[in-house]
Amino acid sequence: MSSGTGDSLVTSTMKKPYLKSDEIHQRTGELKQSLAIWRNILLPLNNLLEWEHKYDPLVIFGIITFIFIFILQANPSVLTLVSCVILVFVLIDLLVPMAIRIIYKNDNWTSTKDSKYTRLCERIANFEDHIKQLCESALKMRKERPLMYLMIGAIFLAFIAFCGQRIDNLLLSYLTTLTICLVPGIRNRQLIPFIRQYIIEFWNNKKSIASSSSSSSTNVSVSSSTPTISSVRTSAIVRPSSTQPTHTLYSTTSYGINKTKAQ
Picture: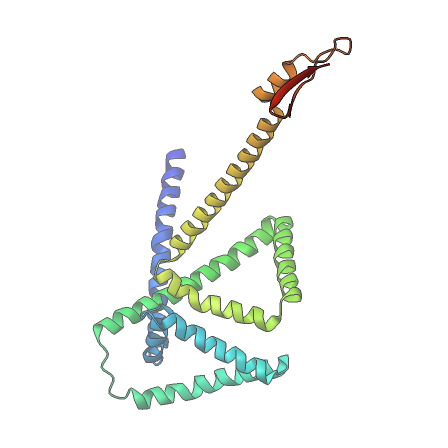
């Protein structure tokens, strides 16, 4: 019985990755079909976010900065801003596919573009799978460990509320949007390990400088506390007592004759 149960566990654990890969592959095919109209827009946008050219980070920074400067100058209310954003998305959803059909009427879709489009759809499917797993783990924690779920949720939401209270909301939204748009290019250029290594080296150098300064201060304190040889010698000199007469020798010169007097 034990061998049978062990074999069943092994086969079930071996089947899970295959099922997951099949689901992602199936979802990738669905996304390729549903986003086929947008593929001529998604590929240049993906190339921009992945920093295909050297000037792409500057373009992203400039576009996002221009949008938020316009919002800052307009200074709309929250309800007006939300309504305008939803209106922009509705117009894009209705008008852009019509413009794409007109502009890309005779589209030359190559195998290179198709491979890039497939990779993009696969990334979207993986992102959806990660979000799904995160929600499932949160619900599982809520059922199995409600105290841990409450503590993590309270700390996270309190931190967000504190940041929203201390930092300007428009500035916080600007930094969040800029970070989200720059992350794909950072990952594509593999800059995350470089940044991590730079932070580790900076921290180690800071710790070494702090330790060397503390050791030098301890050495200075020890050297000041230990007596020197000259001080020992001066303390070892026997001073004359008050009973012994003191002799003072001095010389005076008068008309070229040296006279010495003793008292």
